[in-house]
Figure 1 (cartoon, rainbow, N blue to C red):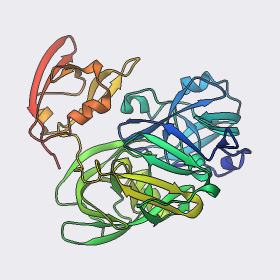
Figure 2 (tube, rainbow, N blue to C red; figure 1 turned 180 degrees about the vertical axis):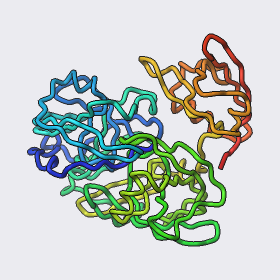
Figure 3 (cartoon, rainbow, N blue to C red; figure 1 turned 30 degrees about the vertical axis):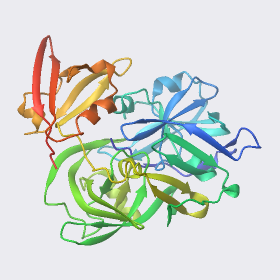
Figure 4 (tube, rainbow, N blue to C red; figure 1 turned 135 degrees about the horizontal axis):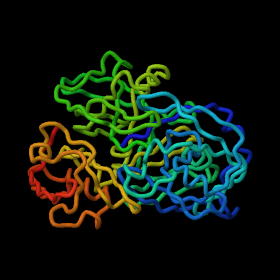
Length: 406
């Protein structure tokens, strides 16, 4: 799932009259556990003393965005204006409402007088993609007020006071620039013919993929020889379509990552149009970032990457079944097949869109998270998958072996 940056009038940031801060002046750091689903960082927050809500931590967004109108209705927000917002995907801009003078709380963190943007319609359906209730997205205010360390292995965010922080570890400091509230980094993409292409990319924790490159932003960015057409994800303006292929190597500082699965959005997408306008070639998401312990220091314009031994050398894989699933139901434990790639193992086994998965390899589907099912479907080529499916009023059995499609 891809969730990229969003364009919004800059005056909204000016309305935030109070900074994010530690709840205790004596604190030098705060540790915040997070959940990890579908390659996304899910952080618990509350708004106006609400019950805990799940928000995606996204370096590519410059606001606090409520994507769930039902959750917004329960908060009794004070709206002052309507705005149009634009994000990736195919379609026109969307209407949203701006609420002012809100309080946001995280573990050990508080902020008052905050502006919040609420979608009038849940067009992203993030809960269906992630498999747990998702209420919104936020990010920039955390990264601009704190030094942020992300430990993907332990699933812990550590926030430090910038004026009291100095990195002393063994990772590599890599310069970044902060442009329009987003962190940019210079890297290299190396194709199979040893062609090296310098790339300027957003570091995007709100994107679940490894790397996305936009065709047309550089004449040297070309599709790999072997690709598959795919629905790459969803943005505010609808479905993001494009191609998937593998890049021979990606160089970030001294680190070399091999055989990286890369998304190539269609050139008519809003993402590609924005990329041309702001002089960038793409973005790096959490499937790549999770291979490191990452420190973001916006105040000093650098990140630190320290390889995670258990993840750094792991192969880049994607679903090997050809199925795209969506989580449904009140607890998001009903799994319905939304799309099946042509000539994929699932398609050849007779699986079709609309089928509901009752069990997979003998395990009841409702006992698994969506991310756990996807792990099963991308773990090992040649692994046998047995599905018990419900199709209308019928029950069907389908069996196939996983196969790398790219």
